[in-house]
Length: 124
Image 1 (cartoon, rainbow, N blue to C red):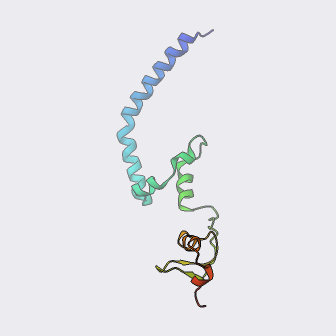
Image 2 (cartoon, rainbow, N blue to C red):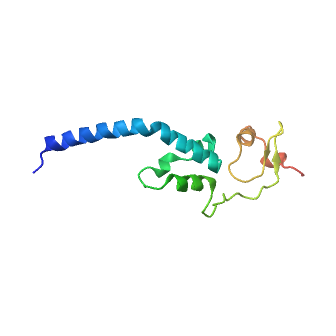
Image 3 (tube, rainbow, N blue to C red):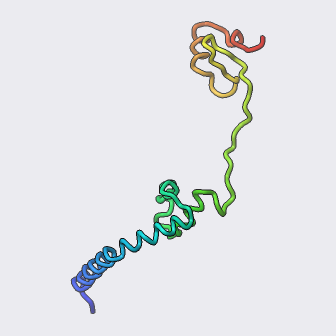
């Protein structure tokens, strides 16, 4: 039976071997990467735009993450944006409000001072 000490010794030997291989192959790997970047037209900006944290632990290949960040191979999700609405109220300093959503601070302040919201209505 193998003891814990034997396994830890093997781990240390393997880690040393891995470090040596990494040091030997580093330059050639960088050259290979640069050649592939040139062939595919990949820039450093493309690489920086890929969210690596999304990939960690999932085992997804880097290409899939790169394609995902560019919207390749998937149905693009569109943001749901409401239709712009013309402003219905205009403040004394040119501020505008469509009448939708929360009352803006400038109008809430004026109302708190005793003014009427309808007095700031655009067009009547």
